[in-house]
Length: 225
Image (cartoon, helix red, strand yellow):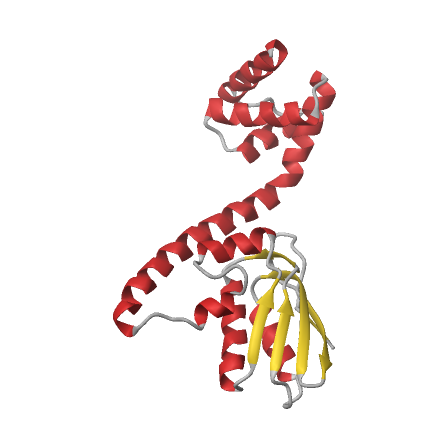
């Protein structure tokens, strides 16, 4: 059994595919890709295809390498399935960025469904809701920063290559030069990289004066280091 996500706008990220097998009354599912917009629908369709005799569903999340706030809805769908059918559901092997998102959301990184199963008493619910809302805000901010980094990576890599070829520096040195230029000129790193890349093109515009000054300072420090 395999379910795949339809195309979505994720800044070049991969779609979600859920494969698995059924053994007697147990289903083992293996999602691969990203938990982004549409992932909960894919999971819901996968769960709907399981035999009615299933009493346990285990998900191995080791193949998921990116997750945004849609991943929390993915967990809600899985939890609802378990409660509605009195079925045991578990997730395991959360790693990398998805594990970080679970931490920010205040969920158990071993099995986030276990966190949801131990909701607080009603008297404490409002305080917990406020804390989760604050954590969600941090989570959304971090995800957005990651998306921007993914989108910026090609032009940053190009700029590093230009500096390496022009100034005979290593890849790490080129990275530090770009970052220092960004700090000295108070300019976003991707904008520094875009300016360096554009200036290397035939008839390309030179970087703005303040950025050019910062770049020269960063290069000078590199030569004296």
